[in-house]
Length: 57
Image (cartoon, rainbow, N blue to C red; front, top):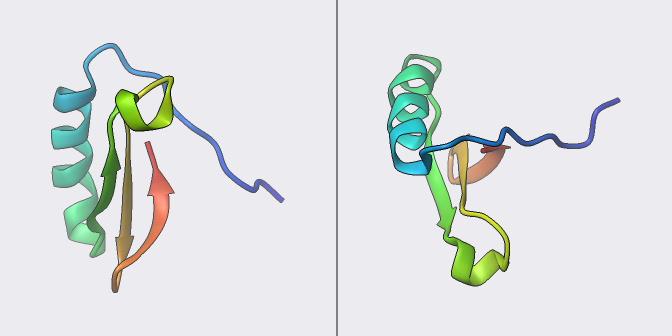
């Protein structure tokens, strides 16, 4: 079982927009977003359905 995984990207904003569009047909929406000032390392976004994040990138 895989608990979680991440994808490193060179352009967070561009990648976020790609995943917003790619996951929309599956019913996923951007639920959470944290920038590097909060995580102390890198920005990440959480996608999911019904307000529950299931995919983080």
